[in-house]
Image (cartoon, rainbow, N blue to C red; front, top):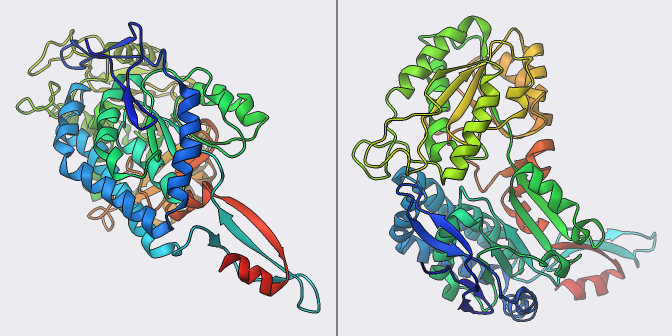
Length: 513
């Protein structure tokens, strides 16, 4: 079986050794092998610092935006190839659209924001001269410049295209060359995206290493930026590396989280918000087979509505068809691999100890168009924890098509339960009661990077609970990683160095002109 090559120093290079086999999520057949053994990562970093930085330094912000747009349009023209590869990773066409089209859209948004909001220059001047003396001969101002480093992105398996592009876009605009380290289970999808865009970008602007990156952090320091998406445990490990703790490389983490959705007391059966809540919960359980860092893991419901909500969600889950992506009628594909299915089953067993499974079977599922055991198929699983004080629903994440219903009595009790998640990427409140929404949003904001309010008035245009938007920050406190990605031009600024420059006003003006 062919080994997946890496794109380093402007060429495709293949590692040596047996590597790690990556299986088709549907059939179990080996797709490729992934290894970085024998590859010279030090040379790749040096190439990025030398060639990549120099090439990007020659471009102004609008010119970098044009290069980013060209890369996005190249992906748009060949996105069907990425759809086909994504199907092997278990993605239905709808799932692939979230990843591929979402990534392309994110890159295009960044290109547009940069074209409209950044100067025709290579530096950003943040303010007018600030007087620092009475005579007007001494002042200061702040400038943003490109560090003399690289951007390293370490991505999760669930979004091999979008996850890469949403980190690449601000780094490219900031003038930092990027080294991509995709997650092994879907590295072949990310590698193909790089193959499509490599020639649209300046030399050295992007590299990709398939496989492990031993020793890479030893090469990084205070001029470099590290963007990580993955588990909270891995984030903590990377954050403790001397590259971060001693040499002060910038580190941004987006980790898993126990995101919640709240149904307001006013949203009784027959009200639009009741149906919106049930629909959103099932969507977040089944898109990407629940393998989303923003998926709803904890669903809080007024205790007097718990049974009716459970029945409504079960009725919707009964219409979900699990099977091979593209097979007739299939609405949910498999997990990314058998190991991931084992992990989810183990997590579900821990969650079920705190309540019960009210829909689905962790051990069996009816599958269309594939073998249920050879592929990494799993039933959507709805759990119910009548005692929300149990710790498991607030500590254990089953990273798959799994969510737990929990009751609450009043807003004060609800806010206490929300806080037990120890920090989340996304939360949502489904209610038409402005007073209740205000109380929940302001009470829960400290624990969330983003909160969606969903009601009958906004539903028609709402992008949904689980969809980060490039114009808004994506990240969250505590368990969610404590970082921020996207956020429009904020993300570009986060890659730049802010420096206060002091001197005479005329000289200051000559420096930044």
